[in-house]
Length: 161
Image (cartoon, rainbow, N blue to C red):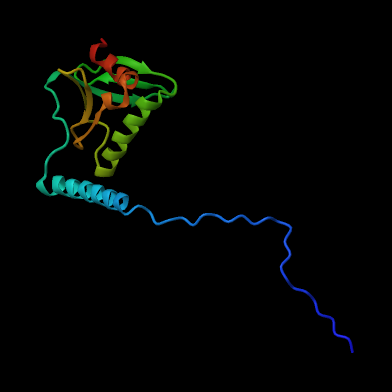
């Protein structure tokens, strides 16, 4: 009987290239990164524990105007001087930032059980910044934080007649 022996030696048509073994990561670099992370975490914890306020205090108010905002049937929003009751401006179209800002404040009013009757306070500050505050909820929006173009949408209401 003849037995056939099959040669199972690996025959590959691909060339094998030896890749250099990656050495261990430099120990000093790992220690430095670990120390930096530890300092950052400890610094943040210290600020939280001590209670340091990291916000810049508001500048004094130079002008304040009480405003109400009413949706109209045509989709526009009337801007009303709360003291005189007169419409000082009408915002048409998308006005995404304007509508989004008001929507957020109105949602908080509804959540806390307040209606739309109370006026919002638009505050022009001595440093040129603008704040839209809701005295009913205590919420406030620093409008300058969203850039001068967005703040200008509300700034025009301070001088509108």
